[in-house]
Length: 82
Image 1 (tube, rainbow, N blue to C red):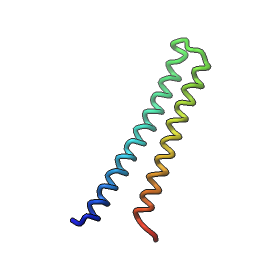
Image 2: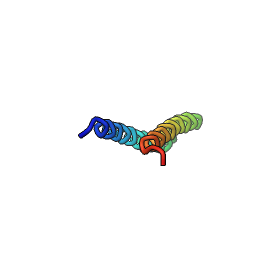
Image 3: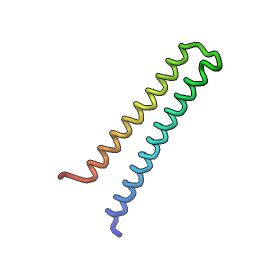
Image 4: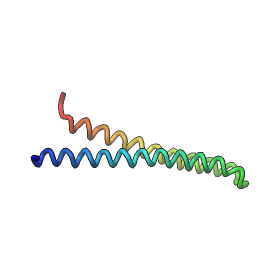
């Protein structure tokens, strides 16, 4: 196995790990958001806290979008010119 093949495999593993992290952030964000919005009224929290949970969820999903675009760009660059 050449050094270039090893480098390509290492880059593929790194991109796959990034993709798994993005998926975990998306799932975790949605679960926590739904849980917070379901438990909030049951615990008697004021409605203004809903905005806090909404903005936190938006921040997590925005981060996931940015990293997903980075992964897409890295894979496109790795394929080379077509």
